[in-house]
Amino acid sequence: MSANIRPAGTFDTNYQQDIAINRTPMSRLLVNGMFVALLILPLLSREGPFGLNIVPIAFIGTIINIAIFAIAVQGLNILMGYTGQISLGHAAFMAVGAYTAAIGSRELGIPFWLGIPLAGLFTGVIGLLFGLPSLRVKGFYLAMATLAAQFIIPWIIRHPLAPLTNGDKPIDVPTPMLGPLNFTSDAAYFYVAVPLAVLLFFVARNILRTRVGRAFVSIRDNDLAAELLGINIFRYKLMAFFISSVYAGIAGGLAAYDTQSVNIHSYELLYSIQMLAMLVLGGAGFPLGPLFGAAFIILLTQNVIPPAANVLKDVLPPLLPFISVVNIESSLRPFLFGFALIAFLIIEPRGLAYRWEIFKIAWKIRPFSN
Image 1 (cartoon, rainbow, N blue to C red):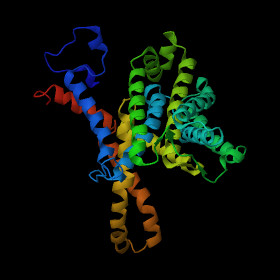
Image 2: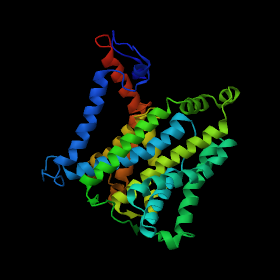
Image 3: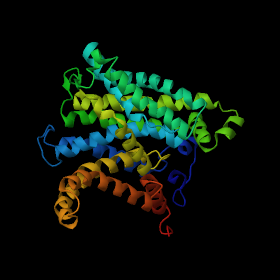
Image 4: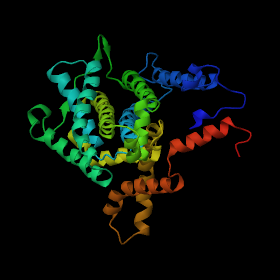
């Protein structure tokens, strides 16, 4: 949205400038500068080569977690934000990627740099199978069809594949290695998860600019009109399910190598709903929406709600003597999370990415932004 608006006097002189994502030198400088600054952060942590403690190592772990979830939610954005297909089984596809990477590494000795893309491709094939109902159903009925994946896939992992997956119990994942390099620490694994996330976001941004991306958007806006224009609806819907599942599988593989353990309980329905919330709060249909949504939810649940709950558990019992103290403490975090989501949707229903675009437009047309 803001890419089409530039300050007065700034115009394109050739086709390469017209198709560039960052059209101005200042925009390119800011994007490249932020990426370089991001890569410097682990070097300033305790696990970095200089042994500094300027950046807390917990902050590096949080960025890795945000990058992994942002990749998964970007896949959901391609399916829902671009193509308009609802999915409630995204966590199950992450589980497929996680177990594929773990089993391939343990049983076949596949290195992690090959296991992660293989996990994505295998998950994409599984996503095609559950995308088949999209030819006949849509809306609520498609949501129910994808919800089936959220129950079928974990059941298969728990029971028929139990000899490989260890059923309900977690399985260990070998240490990610690249030759002599060991990526066990957060400071080292940062250089796997974050650059890969940046690459996948770049790919997703460019998908929207291609013929495939335009077909996705036309199906989202009006699938009947898209079909009358000659777009093969079923083909592009399946393509959206495949790409979305590939992103989920890569995120699952990254999560498996990050924690060096896989547990099916980490990919239940609650996590699918949480990723859906990340997309809605971040801004569905915006390239940066998954990043904003993942960062907002993770920081909210890890850094805001816990201290707030610790304060309220001492304040609320005297004010609510008719409610058990145990019930108050157990319900504080879900209540605060739900209250934050409701408040956010009332204040900014179109998501953080939409507000970011408005801010960039106002900055570009200053001093006439009002």
